[in-house]
Amino acid sequence: MNIDLMSSYLILSAALFVLGMFGVLVRRNVIVVLMSVELMLNAANMNLIAFANYYKSLDGEVFVLFVMAIAAAEAAVGLAIVVGLFRNFFSVKTTDASLLKG
Amino acid sequence: MDINDQRTIMLFLSALTILSASGVIVAKRPLNSALWLIATLCLIAGHYAFMGSVLMALLQILIYAGAIMVLVVFILMLLGQYNAERETNVSIVGAIAAVLSGGLLGILVFMTIVWSATAPVVSNIASEIKSKNEVSVFGNKLFGDYMYVCNLIGVLLFIALIGCVLLALEPKRRLALGRGLKAMHSDMEGR
Image 1 (tube, one colour):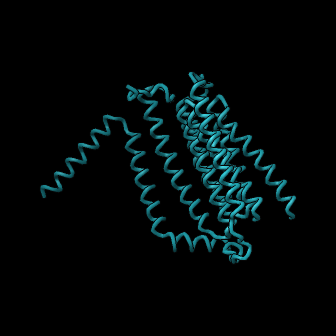
Image 2 (cartoon, rainbow over the protein chains, first blue to last red; image 1 turned 180 degrees about the horizontal axis):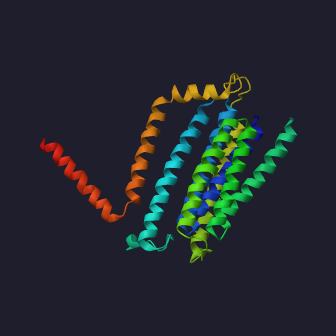
C-alpha cells in the first residue's frame, strides 16, 4: 500500500469516526446511539487494518479481532441495559431517563 | 492493478461508505438506521478485502453484520421501535455537536497530512502477511504473542454473559438470587 492510499484511508476513518460521534451526540434513541458507537469502533478498526497493511505486520489485525470481541460484549451488555431501561421507563429515549439530572 | 485503478476503486467504495454512514445518523426510523449500518459494515468489509486483509473482511461480515446487527435488530423488534423519532431541542445540541465533530475532523485531517509528510518509507520491510498462509500466521500471533490478551478477552466475555443474565432477570428474582447466594455463602462459612 502506498502512502497516498494510506492517507486517504486515514481521512476516511476520521470521517467515519466523526459521523459516529455526531450520531452519539445528536440522536435521542439509545439503540441508535449504540449503533453510532459501533460506527466509531469500526472507524478505529479501519485505522488499525490500514496501518497493519502499511507496515506489513499482522499485529494490527490481531488488535482488530480483540476490538470485535469487545464490541460484541458491549453490544450484548448495552442492549440488556436498553431492555432494562424500557422495562422501567417504557421508552428508550435518552431524554426520558433523566432521574439523575437534578 | 495499476495505481489509478486502485484510487478509483477506493474513492468509489469510500463515497458509498460515507453515504451509508450518514444514512445511519440521518434516518428517522431506528430500523432504517440499522439497515444503513449493515450496509456500512459490509462496505467496510469491502475496504478490508481491498486492502488485502481477506480474513478480516470475512470476520467483519460474520461478527458485525451477522451476529451483532442481528442482535440489534432483534432488540428493535422486541421493543417495538418502528416509529420515527420526534427530535426535540436538537437545535442547540446539534450546533454544539456539529462544531465539536467538525473541529475533530479538522484536527484529524491535519494530523494525517502531517503524518504523511513525515512517514517512514516502508517499501523495504519484509512482508509478514504475504509470506505464508495468512491464517496460520494470524493464529500463531493470536495464541503466541497475544495469548494472555486472548485469555483476558475470554474472561471479559464470560463476565459480560453473567452481567447480561443479571440485567435480564426481573428485580424480584434478582433479589432472590442475591439472598440465595448469601445463604450459600454463609453455609460454606459455617462448615
